[in-house]
Image (cartoon, rainbow, N blue to C red):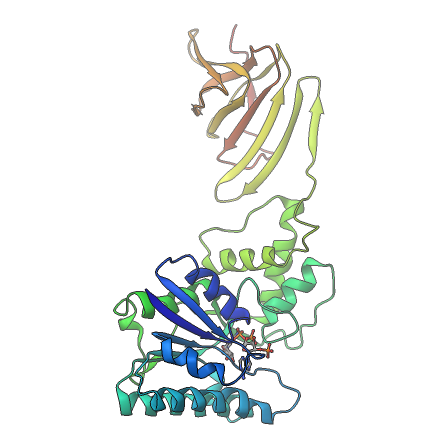
Length: 378
Ligand SMILES: NC(=O)c1ccc[n+]([C@@H]2O[C@H](COP(=O)([O-])OP(=O)(O)OC[C@H]3O[C@@H](n4cnc5c(N)ncnc54)[C@H](OP(=O)(O)O)[C@@H]3O)[C@@H](O)[C@H]2O)c1
C-alpha cells in the first residue's frame, strides 16, 4: 500500500487525480485543502509516500496571495519533511508562467527553486511540470481556463467574448496530465524519456496549439452536432478531448435531445449519427408482415442487425435469379453484411414489431443516393 498526499485536492486537477487514484486499491489517499488546520500537515507529511502538490493560488484578490499560496506552502512542506527527516517524492504543478516576470510566475518559480534545493540536499525525487493551460472535465468557467468558459457558456446559449481571435493557446488535456502524474507513482521509468531541461523538470508529451477564434469555432461545431447528427473526426485527438470536455459542461437537465423520426405505413426510422469518415448509423422499426428495401447499391455497403423481433433478409445478385435468405432475430444477434450488386430486402416475419440497427458506409445523399429500386423476388 502507498499513502499519497494531494494538496489542493478539491481543485480541477486534484479532483481528476483523486478519481483516478481512487480506482487503485493499493493506494491510500490523504488530502490537504485550504480549510484544513495548518498543523494537520505535520501528520500528513509524516505518513505520505508520495506528494502531489497542487495547492496553488491562481486568481487572488490580492497579488500578495501568490507568494503565500504558491511559495510559502511549498517552503512549509519541505521544512516539515526535513524536520521529520523524511525523503519523499514530490510532484509540483508549476506553470509555463514561471518563465515570466509576473507575480504568479515568480511565485511558481520560487516554489520550483525550493523543491530543486530539497532534491539537491536529500536526493528526493522531484517532478516539476511547467503546465500550459489544462482543459477537461471539472475545470471551472470564468477562472483559469478559457476552454471551460467557452464550453460552459456555449452549452447554455450564453455569449462568449473572443478578445483577440488570433491569440494562440497552448493546451494539455487533463487525462494526459493525470496519466503522466500517475506514472511517477506507479511506474517511474515510464516517462523517463520525456524529461526536459533540469533533472527535475518534466512535460506532458501532447501539447495542442489553437487560436482563440479556432477554439470558439470548434466548440460551436460541437454544440451543433445535435442538429447535424455529425460526430467530429475521431482521428483528431484534440477534437475528441474537446468533445468530452464540452459534454462535461452540459447542464444536467440537458443531456437528451430529440431526433427527427420518419414515420410511414411501414413503421418508423431515425438517423442516430453521421460522419464523413464512418458513414451513418440509423434505426428502424418495421410493422408485422412489412417488407422494406428491394434495392441495391453500386458502392454503398451496409450492415443490418435485427435487435428485436424476427426477420428474413433476402438477397439476389442483380445478374442472377437465385434468391438467398438469412433468417435473423433479436433472440440471437448476428450482423448481416450487405454487399454491393445484390438487391436486398428485409421482411418482418414475427408476431410483433421488428427493430433493426443499420450502418452504412456513406451518409445518405439525396442528390447521389446510390440506391436503385429492383425487387428481390421477380
Ligand atoms: N489548470 C491549469 O491550467 C494550470 C496550469 C498551470 C499550472 N496550474 C497549477 O496547478 C495547480 C492545480 O491547478 P487547478 O487547475 O486544479 O487549480 P484549482 O482548481 O484552483 O485548484 C487549486 C486548489 O488549491 C487550493 N489551495 C489554494 N491555496 C491553498 C492552500 N494554501 N492550502 C491548501 N489548498 C490551497 C485551492 O483552494 P481555493 O479554491 O479555496 O483557492 C484549490 O482547491 C495549481 O497550483 C495551479 O497553479 C494549473
